Image 1: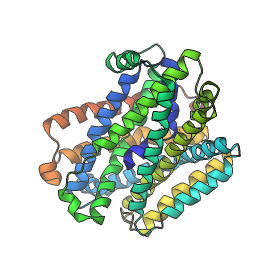
Image 2: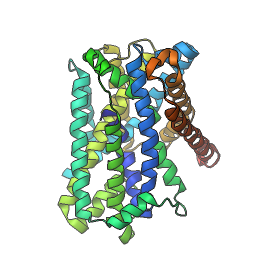
Image 3: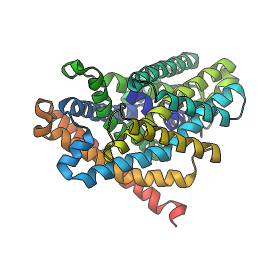
Image 4: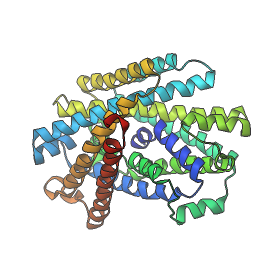
Length: 392
């Protein structure tokens, strides 16, 4: 649930809204592809967390040395920090639009609230409950919007079962797969499961299923695409941000629909604000040898640092600056394939994994997923370094 909530952020809401608004139901099949790979890597990361008494970065250090683990932790911290401003802006705009006020006070308030959650004695339990509540807020918001939209069931089935690539859609397909098939989110799953086991050791012998949360992630993505396809596509309404979707709902279904969607946007933004910061702080703490669980004060301070930096950038610029996006994308291009390879190699290592080593089927499917990751990295590096005016 936590992994699903932190992956489904404001950027995901924008991408899915845009897919439905521009291409209707035709790209629903992409959700299944991305979710299958995400489910496989998240389940693999879960097994790694259960199989070992050390963190995933410690296993990376064991296999490839300290420089590899430090580079991985620092890379994740830089990516998380760079994208954090977008989550802060999403929270501020969602609540600001609801109450017709400036987003700035809400950015400050909800970051302060997020930081205060860090200092509960059992931060993991608070994080888990908060994320579950936010997941249900999002589900309620989007499912209600779904019934308001009254989509065409035949077109929905066709969208899932008939893969097509409409002209000009490649960029959105790549953006969706890259954000939904989140290797950083999958990596963090091993830390979350170990935190659960630390609190309740008996869970190591229990069934630890991560698939339900990832299916919910896919359901939310699909619902938003379907809503946008039913409401915006026939009217030719463009979407450049998640708030555009909310504004488009109001003249068609009234203020209540717009309000409901903004509540969903708030859930997406606030869950990612806390989750993304937790990822960055935990991985850097582990890389620097300061601890890898939420009981470590150093880890909590690093999580707070990610939130503070994101809030400062959001308040100063009112958005995620282009230069910061380019920097984050640059780091992501190099870090994500390495992380995916590390998870795959550790999952295949019988000495580390024991009876939880990857099965032949998982090796094949995850291997294809790894090829997808490298393919996306090559495409994104070409777009970033050769077609971006900042590099010309």
